[in-house]
Length: 540
Image (cartoon, rainbow, N blue to C red; front, top):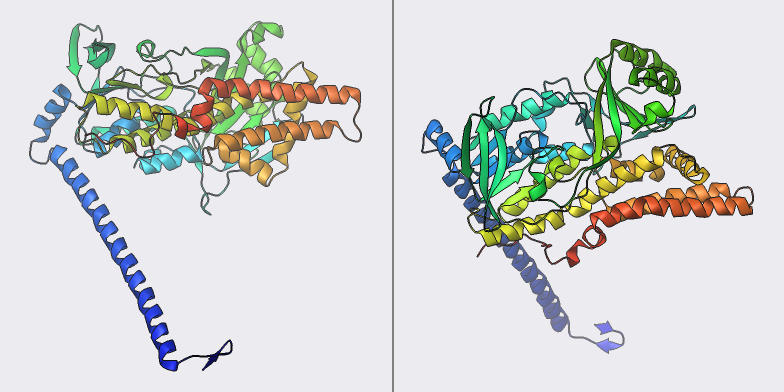
């Protein structure tokens, strides 16, 4: 046989082909065997984990005896049984931990916030096994947002996730919380008790447990100890001061009303009206009710010459609303069930204290404009659950502390993205006497109106489906550049160039302080932080 002018022996060529084929078959068999062994190792690890959970479960002991053991000798004490506390208790209970939950008031909460769960938060709810908590409570699906400004409007839909349609959910906060409490009440190893925690018990700079009171008059005081205490007692937390160096700040209030039998311009969508001086939100919370939240900056009612809040709502806010919502809005104001709650923000600056951890609004808050609070809390819980999973128990204080330090860093990219977006959007959406910032506000509305990647990217950030800090910064400055580009048309002038420069400076002045407060290194380069672990540290 000739090959490039050389004579080759047919037997030699056949042997070469057989050798190559044998090598390929050998490599394939080796790869297959390695994959089989890897699967077996994963199965063995999962079986060991299941056995560990079974060993901690009340399968042998009576449920009543086990409940008493949990109450007197828990692995974890959780203070607060709101969304964060209940979800955390259920997640740790599924892991076989003994969890004692102490909640000041077990009656159904009645709040005007915590009613919109973004798609990213709902996916975390599914991951935690709590998705059925939105069932049987008349919880509408939410498909996206509609925005209104100066007579113009645009609609943006939630983007697909892995090619599949995803939705948010809205509901009465109290109904949702009660469904979660019902679930943890049925979870073996979790005890839910009505009690008011008065203080954390510390010894040698380590939290050992809590002191609490039971009864309406608080006549009975008790103490309970656990290796880990997690504080989830909400935005008005009394225990925060010993675990965090941050303090909440507020420059506006949300005034809440319920519009009954109101037809939204876009059904199953959140509605944002870019009014003067600040946004107004509408979204369904049941099949017959629409929640309205009016952002009212501090001192604004008197600033426009109104004698009372109802007068401000009817005379100043109502004329700015879409025509379809004016009548039901005025009817709600006339009915008089008007409630108010401060819009608080607080960066996450924990004081790392062995034996204790902060979660939820007790730990980190952002303006509720974007409805990201529950998404951050549920994401934090999923991260914490996965990090604590390798620990057989929490008695090793050193190992547990290394886990909690790592948690504070690993949560940053997701939480900081949602926090930064909420703070930045609120400042952009508020009216301003500065011509440059008003141009930024118009640019933001028109940028989202372009559709495609211009709306999908920001909405993916807003919904928690793509919580990437770098993507947020890129889109934010893209809006600024878009606004500057429009200013320069049809040709630039000194005045336009000056306004454009102020617009860019204003955009940087909005977003950079928020990111700095979150921690630039922790947000953008978490891998470089010593407390960050690709995989959680394993106790030795």
